Amino acid sequence: MVRIKRKVIQIANSTQLISLPRKWALKYDIKKGDELDVDEDGYKLLVTTGTVPTTREIEVDVSGLTPRLADRFMARSYQKGYDMITVQYDNPETAIAIQNKVKELLGFEIMEQNKSTIIIKSISSKLNIDFDSSLRRAFLIVMDMANTCLEAFTKADKKTLENLYYKDFDVNKFCYFCLRFINKGFHGGSGTYILYYLVESLEDVGDEYKVLAKHLAKVKTKNKKNLLDVLFKVNELTKIGYEFFYKPEKEKAVRGITLYKETREEIRNLFVTRDANEAAALNSLDLIARGVYHFPTMRLDTLKGLGG
Image 1 (spheres, one colour):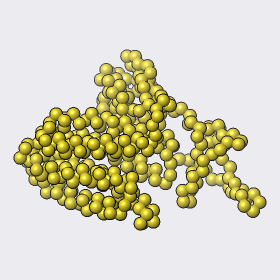
Image 2 (cartoon, one colour):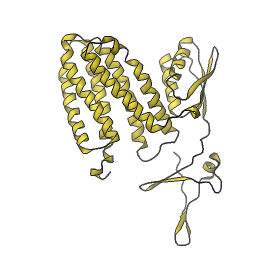
Image 3 (cartoon, rainbow, N blue to C red):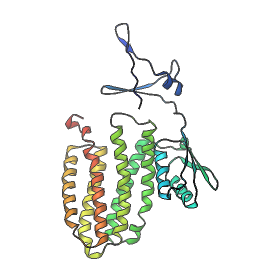
Image 4 (cartoon, rainbow, N blue to C red):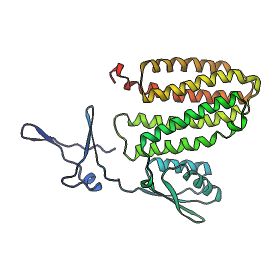
């Protein structure tokens, strides 16, 4: 963010004006008579234009990186708002990792590929989705993953647990899109940074439910009851986080923090287990609880009862 100072110009006794930065006006082709959106946010005014931002391109060489690091690079480049990515690579495994990652990047397609280069471009103009519907969709998929974990573990349905990771691909798609949307400047306001963190947290929660399912599929039957109780409570926390995000209520915030403390205490008490898979499952449940805990606590300012 670049901060530019402007002097206020007084016109007659009522109107006050400030000028637009020349470079910004040229970049977005602002002309006399154009309409701009001005949003009031406390002591701030946010001025935006409907003009599509300039296409951003990047060329990189991921040779020498592991496939996992190439995967991460692709995700971050997409989230940061690049519209065309030219990638140089040095082995087939890295190319496969990039190809697989592009499937999770909404609006991106591989346009060209040879033995050492892949060119990926945005075709997002063909997408009929927006930030709000994408974020809600990501939430609902995470909720579905939570319910599937509980139901499949209750029924000892190992196959369903082992295949849960497919749903995480969709969580990634919608969360990545939301992060990109924010970084492209299409979603502003004083809560932007918190919102960005919460979207990243939601994506992490989806990842952790995927890992949890893998461990639950290997847990011994005798350790099932303790985990079922904790899993039920963590899923309830996830539900509270979702409901509070869209309808903030004081009772939900109080219920969330109370349940969070109870659940983490129960998890700590169960860590005496000698079953490695149970311990791994408990660790995943702990990470999920800590992730969804932020959804009510970091949005307390939206409570009307607190003046939000």
